[in-house]
Length: 291
Image 1 (cartoon, rainbow, N blue to C red):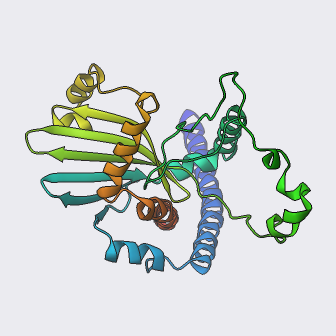
Image 2: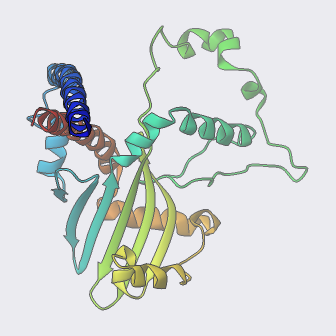
Image 3: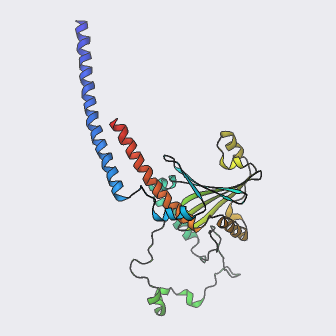
């Protein structure tokens, strides 16, 4: 009787296993079909076999060589500038982070605009724009000088109402997302300067400027190098620097190709690469499910 009971129990387990496999097979088929549907939809929406014209034009006529490894988030641009080796990195992770919290940047920008609502909006000249560097234009009493005609909004001034009022839909250009761009400039035997920037709406905004006597510390690949880097004094916050020094550092980058053209290229390429990596991910998951 004991042997018969064990045999019966084993048979029940085999039946349950087969039923479970059948259920998984149905789910697998549905999942595979959904992945195929997503693939077709993405391919119909965009042709990712060829580079967009704007991206191709920049790569063909720009000074940088592109290094883009499929399956990796980071993209690298390199060039030689005299005795300098320049390496620029950016990542599609910035776009993914923005998708997870789309209101984060708009909220930060709103707070920044609110804090500076009483300040004139004069910006610096040059290829890059530094943060927080505005001309205060205040009197000794602390008030901002405002011309009488400027105290009235253009829309409320009859003589300018027709000229200043934009047509419906005009001037409502969608802003691009902020993309972090790290620039490392190395001289043989002289160390390296690393400049952290943000590219958005055709502008490069500098966040920090670091100096490393050992160029390997600028791109620390080992735990030892990373630890050595953390203990070093690498420079003050960029916004604390003298304004003239800020402008010269912006011109320094502009001269090396970190300019408006690059600021427009980076978000475009991030969007293109993210879509291409997403297609590869869909295809790889589908192949795995069907294997």
